[in-house]
Amino acid sequence: MSWFKWPRAKTKMSNEPKTEPQPEGAARLVDPDKLKAVTPPVEVDKSLMSRGAPGMRTAPAAAPKEVPPPDLSKLPKDEQGNPRDLTLAEAKQAKEAVIRELQTIYDPEIPVNIYELGMIYNVSVGLKGDVHVKMTLTSPACPVAGSLPGEVEQKLRNLSGVTQARVELVWDPPWNKSMMSEAAKLELNVM
Image (cartoon, rainbow, N blue to C red; front, top):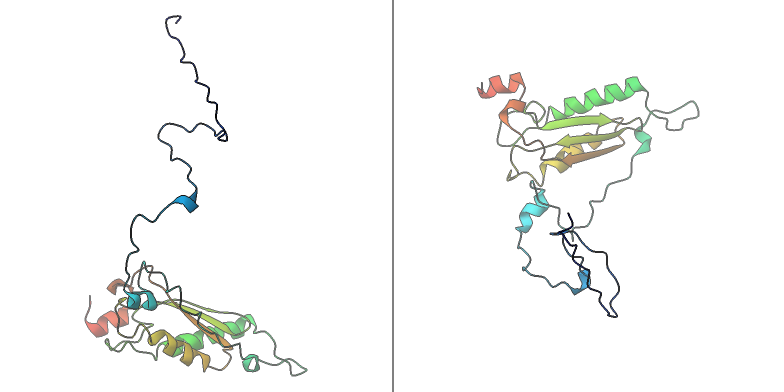
């Protein structure tokens, strides 16, 4: 192997700070302040952002939705008359009441309630009477996308034992007909 000679490194005399050598093909470190925008910002349909369509972030200028404080007067009382946490049995009963209430709310375009349509992904009830519902809509372009979650929240807030209700609109997994209950499929003749 005496025939191979390693190339000598050239020495640089400069006032620039030394940088570590980067591997072949590595991206060069650049000061982000010196970068210029190469492409103009993409215009996004603002109505999609406000509806929470899949892949769309919520509008950055939108103020966070004001959540009313929990109404602790709806909780059961202890011996001294102070609100106390729900027992597990009471929380289970509250969850059943929430599900019964969800079964009274109908999609305006389909004559089946939102629970049987499979639009409710999760219902949880905390020991403080706080209810959290994850729901979706049949389509991101649903005409009631802006009003149905608020309607659901309001109806749940009116239930006894519910101190606070929050409805989270989610798009993953996307709704499809297989999520409907058997009763809903029979009623809509979808098999």
